[in-house]
Length: 289
Image (cartoon, rainbow, N blue to C red; front, side, top):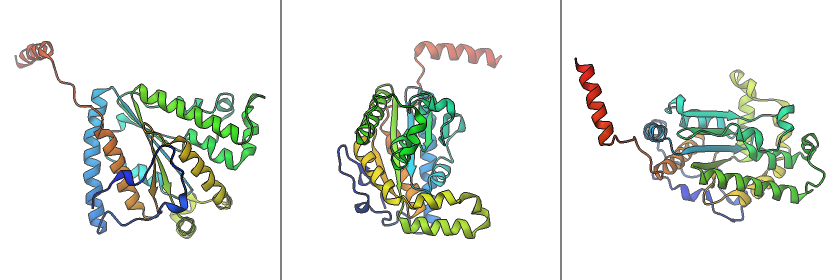
């Protein structure tokens, strides 16, 4: 079954209503073995494209993952990127900001981690936390020492949306392609996964009281995501709302979006010109002695 990424893309200025978007769709695989084969084909293609991206050294790819707790971000990154050369890929997870990071603007710490040309950068959570968790927990703003003239209320979030959109326009213009994924998990599936983390000793480390407390803000997070997705999905930096109740399906969808994005780039292994070919022939003769 062919995956159409456009089905999950948030169009520019689209009004987003998460309850109207599915958390589960018809499977793109018939069995576990079929899924393994399908993902392996995608991984092999991704490995080839990543090698060309690295050799071409003109573009970079930034992948951003956001989601509710237990939606499977780590698993998607682990499985989809398993065939990528580590030399050409960097993964960053952004936790609570340090004192030094709080003394800078909200985009500073993530900007330092942007991928170089030829590489794939992955943000497991990102600068979007500043319009998500900070919006749900506005008390976090007090630690950011914002200037007195900073807008309050909705004005602050609109200002940050504009800052983010401006950054992403700048990055696109300078060769960084940006793809953003929201893994769309149902509240019931989150509950099931939390229970699994409690019942499986090998997964106990993944669950804490904080996770349960944050679950109590489900509606507030959903509202924050809806506003964020609608305000920041653009033609050059689109959001994809990926149904995440089926982990395997989510991985196949994410992988296809990445493949399509890389496939649209005019990249390839550099070809030697006449001068370079003469040089190589001369070097070959030296080695052949």
